[in-house]
Image 1 (cartoon, rainbow, N blue to C red):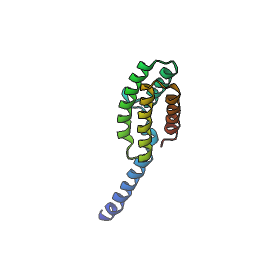
Image 2: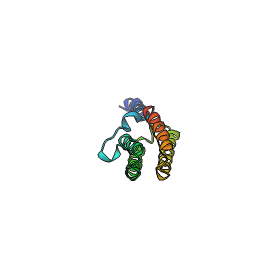
Image 3: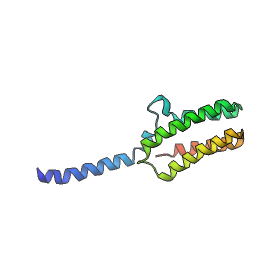
Image 4: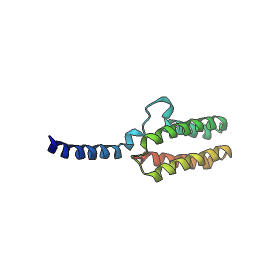
Length: 120
């Protein structure tokens, strides 16, 4: 019994650690109505293209809330720099919305799409 535990516990720990490290791609997927980050960003894009800045600002608040939820789920399975990058993108999108700068907002939104697609 002791020999079994001697091998089983480290193997189980390694398997759980490995599973956590590769789980980022499915942990980023929405699990509730308020953590649909990609949907909120798509809504922001639509509002920015139509110059509906008030609605874009509202959707940005939803996106920040969703990012706070998602970031807690994925913090151990993705690189910290990627998380900082997405946080920075959300801040730059907010600045573009406040300044009503359509081109800048769209550049940041499409960069977000690229980061999100390669997120794992």
